[in-house]
Amino acid sequence: MDNSVFSRNWLQLRESADHRSRSHALASVLLDFLDSKQRVNILDLGSGTGSNLRYLSKYLGDLNQRWTLLDKDESLLDNIKKPTMKSVDFVPVVGDILDEGLQLVQGSDLVTGSALLDLTSEKWLHKLAQSVAHQGCPAYFALSYTGNISWLSSDNLKSNHSNPKNHDFICDLVNQHQRRDKGTGPALGPLAVIRLDELLRGRGYITKCHPSHWILGHEDSSLKKALIENWSHSAIEECPDEKKKILSWRHSCLSLADSTDGILEVSHLDILALPKLRSVNS
Image (cartoon, rainbow, N blue to C red):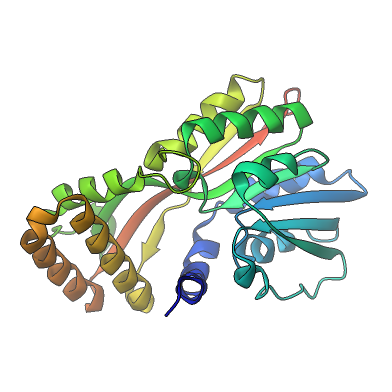
């Protein structure tokens, strides 16, 4: 299986969890901000197969929306289906967020992305904040991973299940792996969304972050297993000498993923940043 097919399958696997986990309140605040515009030009960075388009276009409802969908993988863009809403149109653009993406901020009424920020570097976030502030448009980024992975008890989602042996050690390895270079320089990983919040507030923006944690139950078994496999691979890359310990953790997690009591929480944050003189009331 080539990387494009793997990416497409992964994006399809996670979309349902993404959509139900996002902060609907922030999307509603964004609609209130944009509601007076006759036409909204939206730049979606790292669009993949269009999950962000499918979610957010419905919240923006009858607004006349023109989306620019940017991704470096043309095969992913080729799999985006045109929305059925007559008020929505899109243009796919093959390009990199480091170059073409930042250039396209100019002329946008909204810059957005989903499951993107934790893959980006300090340098890129500085450039993004600078470009957004220069344009004077809102920024809305959903589902940024923030570093916490826990198994929860099904009878009380606020209490931790007994995490497998060596869980914290392996999660630390996963988070170290998240900070490798993903194309824009060493990634900030779990720290990225808070860093963007700081950078935009420093430029006069009013920001709001809402949790958008994945809560993955029995119906999400395939997604949980894919995550466990990915995390195990990342942990082994970081610390190959501990492969035996990591594979034991993997086995325990896969057993939990199959059980009706195996509820997995993966922490994320959504951020909405509005230009000064406009407030976030949610």
